[in-house]
Amino acid sequence: MFQTLMRSTPIWLFGLLIMAGCVVASEFGRFLHRRRTPREDETKSSTEGYVVGAVFSLLAFMISVTFSIAVDRFDSKRALVEHEASAILTSYQRAALLDEPGRTRLQGVLRSYAMSRVALERTWNTPNDEALARTRLLQRTLWATALDACYPLRTTSLASSVIQAVNETLEMGSRRELARLEFVPARVILTLVLYLFVASSVLGYMVDANSGRRRALVYVLFALYTAAITLVVDLDSPLEGAVRVPQAALEQVAAAMSLNS
Image 1: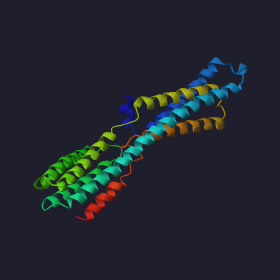
Image 2: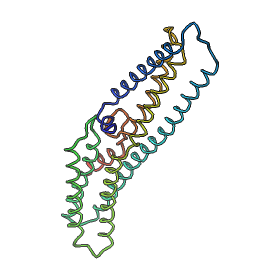
Image 3: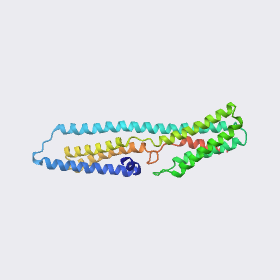
Image 4: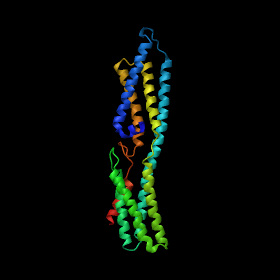
């Protein structure tokens, strides 16, 4: 349920909800503090600072570990784009060695396929089902066209090299589609959010934030931790948010193939 809610909610709204939860949790902590400790008997202790520091230090460590996982996944997705672009270009170059009309047909399908792979990522906050259906249709067409073009040369090493390149192209496409479905476990993000709420309650309970300046500093702290968690979710969402996997490699290959058409 949380996974669906998190992925269907815009990144900015998700961050605002976390920030609002932190403020509410902090006010709840201040409310408990006033109920349990009369102001006239209140004593300050340096232990409070250590407790608050330890709570938020552990949260920072948890976020840093999760951030590292999200960055690794982002780098893997970016590398897959580069590998797929290289595989498409290799297939296009090897197809140039085939006889007509197989050469023209196969290179034409490869051009269309490269453009469809770029268009597949040009979405903003909504998965493009039409683009995904088109690229899958082109995958089947590409394989069938490669088999037809190489059939007269099926006993030669040229046909083997072309089929191998096309197979690698399709394999990289499948790996990219599977990588799109891999996320940091929703339970990890939920744990970070709940921990932040609890830490906010502890901060509100132990820190007197009656003054406007001190309360502003507390809210800045909430905003920083909220931004860190939101960035983790943004990095881990290839179809949503502001941080997108670069498509420069595929765009360059598609442009080069269009010039040669």
